[in-house]
Amino acid sequence: MKKHNYLFILSNGRVAAINKKDGSIAWEIKLKDYISRSLSYSIGQLSAEGDKVYIGCWGVLVCLNAKDGSLVWKNDLKGWGYQFVSLSNATNEAASAAAQEAAQAAVVAAT
Image (cartoon, rainbow, N blue to C red; front, side, top):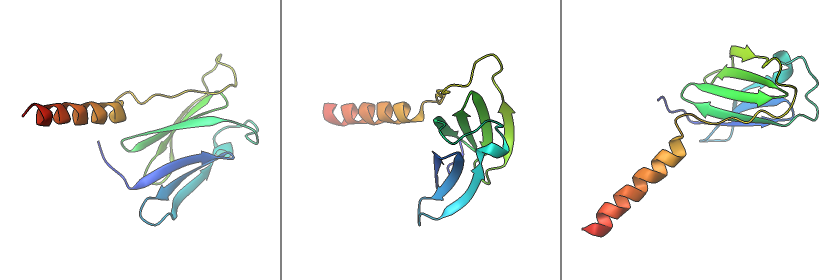
């Protein structure tokens, strides 16, 4: 999986990549360009995996290219309504890393 030096944020109908080194905005998009509903009071969630950023907002799932914010695909989730979309990273990287650290600590403690 490709690593990048960005933090991704979702706020006020916009998604941005923030450079971890200096805090500058590498790219920014407005979700209204991809979602035709009003986003002024929307609550969404995002998940980054590899070179993709996934955003769930107002019953729509959007996939962006992590490098430049360009649209990869969009799914209107027809029939699911216009509510909050909860996302989960299938690889669960954080849990995997924590498990590896715990296993390494156990080996060190046993020796």
